Length: 473
Image (tube, rainbow, N blue to C red):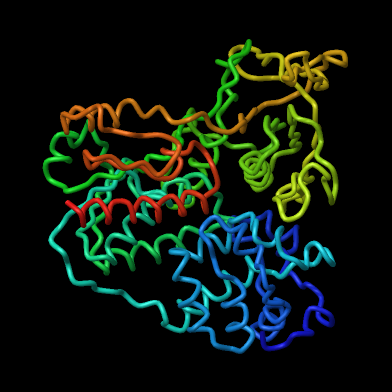
């Protein structure tokens, strides 16, 4: 720790967002950056705690105090090397991670001014690319081959880790481009897709093969896969959104959130859609059902389309502001979160149940809702109880952003099981799963829907398990 008193004299300074009236006119990244001098000052605030709770809270185990100190001292290259030792793609996590490390920073507890760890992380990563510190690595090959199904964050990490251990890695992706949720679920105003392309190009230079527009069981059989490769890792993500099977669900104008987000990202990459399939909120009243990050992304996208009104409803109670006794430090705080998209114009409501969609000539026109409260039953379960009269919200578009159910794995997994002809040895559960029959899983395919950084952590774990399995084989 180069400056042991910096946290006493230097306050937390965030880079902040681009001006609202400017950023809602485009899909450029909303977050700004600090100059290198101010960034180093922010890094100096790290106290190098005896027990670094930031490290404890980080799913991938980043050793933040070490690279914060290197950044403060101006050793950008060394800072990147330490950062990359635990995080395969800091340019991703530095942009989209909710930063549980910052919520567990001792300065969050003592002064409510945690170190700007996430912003510092992406600053280090961008400097590394800008200054040419990130160069292709060409490891000595060990003669073994691994197939990865799915090119999202977990699959990319598994590929990156195994490739650098000397394995010949082939990644199969059913979409036409690599990235998974990073490319097709997260808006450009949070993560511009050239950031993904830059990393994918580097991985290709290092010898990783990406086979896109290819679906296992359709374009290539599972049998062919397990015969051709020494191990297979399933990283198909959690692609099944939670539905809302109520009256009027079939109406035109009711969409899953990812239908909007994926289509918009594809449009920005040059793809066009027929008018009957195009989802656009220009001049429309929008209702977003679900209060999480995906719902927030729908709000920001609708604002950029030119929606005349956006309402977001959440079935759960409004979280506390600032501090929640139920989630004390160093736990991740369940408190009210206001995103950049919320600032761009949105009416938010909590404890609201959606009763039915109302249409006219097959087109959504309104949504019937009702205020509710939550009580604990005699069995200890939380139950929803109506507390208000039903009311009508006018809406031309409704986006379902209620999370994801655990992915339906039976298709791919069953095919792989039969292909290795050893069903009883296959283990796919809530861990990065491994089996004696060379089938593994990582990311949301193993755990259910979670954070990108947790999918990346699962990818690292699966890569280690695959390496152990093939080394012992």
